[in-house]
Image (cartoon, rainbow, N blue to C red; front, side, top):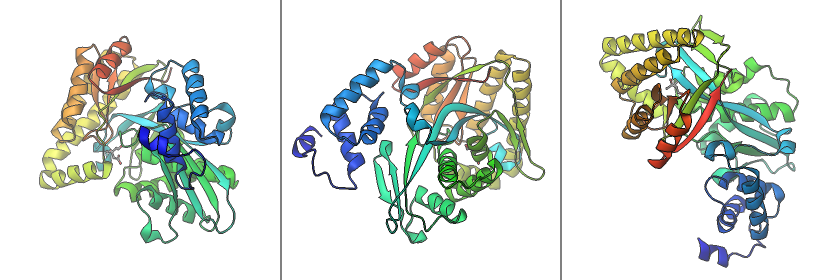
Length: 390
Ligand code: MEV
């Protein structure tokens, strides 16, 4: 990398390599993993992708915050925030997978969001997509069949809103870790829809935002329950059941709930995991239905435990839920290790969250979040503390 940097003059960087160049410059300026994303965002925003500028930003960021990984990287500057639109990340406390089969699930918002910004471009320039943190800088292919991954959702959104002939630059700031079971794909769709709404003054109701994000989720993983897009849209504690009549009950959390989120570092691929569970369900329908019923019961008991502020019981319910998720074969080595670390260090309960197979683990830690987080980090995982409600 360093010889590559030497070889590059900071002038004459070709268009299309800006984010890659910013990453290289940030690395050369000594941006550590904890502040890397923030440095890249600010570097690109400054328009001066030079080492001296990156060093200045590194010092500035280090001076501003000694906060841990996930909280430190998230905050775009105030002025920028006014032009940004957000989709929220989430954790599922109970009910993942079972919710696809009509059972209840309980989800909570996390203070992480994906943000998006739209700028006009010259006619004929098409749609440019920039995600500095992921090193992505590309044009949306005009032919739908050439679109890959999230380009498909972007295309769907633009067409549904009648904006597919507009020329624009879309900038995305993803503060929700990718493929970690924290609702990143739904949050991305909602952030883009809201940014378009803001920029083109479409006056979309939340319900329309949610509906469109649900369509995007179908493109992303086939048979979504709808919980992720609903959370990404509304960002409030939610008891959810799909179907007609479904249920969308927003809960007030009187007492704050403190969790540590441990990241396995292994991607959680919702489509793959949901398909795997479906195959098993087809082979062992009555067995799987019984497990889903048990998870449903845990979810409803979990709501009661939260209302009664009975955190010990809430933790026990989480532990049992993890056992049932393991029975569904959506756990993994890393998930089990993180769960064990959390319990050994005094978490009241710990389980995977989201589709599993990797992704993230949530640990309920009213007293000892710092201990649990440090233990996870010592074992080589990224971890962060989040407080929900209260
Ligand atoms: C993914 O966050 C939650 C799942 O239950 C899938 C869904 O509800 O669509 C695994």
